[in-house]
Length: 271
Image (cartoon, rainbow, N blue to C red; front, side, top):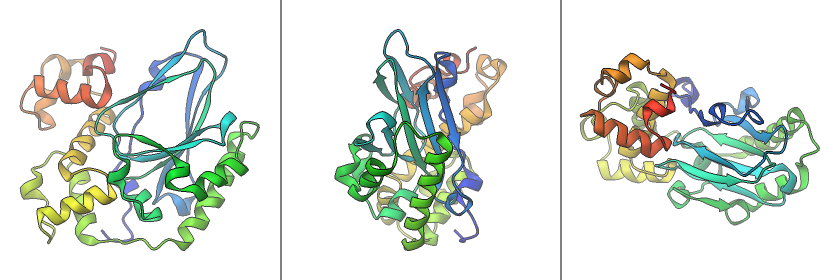
């Protein structure tokens, strides 16, 4: 992967579930500073506009990314959530204000030299993983600050981190990433990812920088491409979609989609 190519140019991780939720729950994404966009896809905020009558079940779909997040009213506690190969649900209280940082695939391990595999399919206290980042959040961010101020503070902090980071643009690894993203995850990983190293070496690189195997990452990319395509009721009805994106049959498509999203395609797309 040439340094002039950014994963952002090839991949748009989508978290779609909030817009189908309560009117009083707001989800917003904010672009980081230009010099951070190779590394950070967005900052995000998930908050209640007014207290809800009951707890809120927030579903996070698989997107191939690693996120740092915290409750702005309790910024003494922050967390990191690794690559997840299935959806995750959080039971939130009736009032909340979460802020997060979504890193593009492979960029969290690049910046912090953390093995992504150790974070996969779970979330951890940030104190245990990156105590200096946790200290920054604890000492500088809170619920009294408007979003633009939080974004500016996060920008300044991560620009400093990026300026000191040594990023390893291993062409063998990033060529494989580019092939997967160019093909929208629809490929044979055994034959289509010949980038000059053995499948075992490539698997080791993917586990360190992504958090799982090339095959699992490809499945998540394929799923995300379906979300972005917003399939029509006709393609769902006529069973055409699953053939177009490389599934063997409709049952396989529905099972895998539900694993990544938490509901069937028909329910996810409201048709």
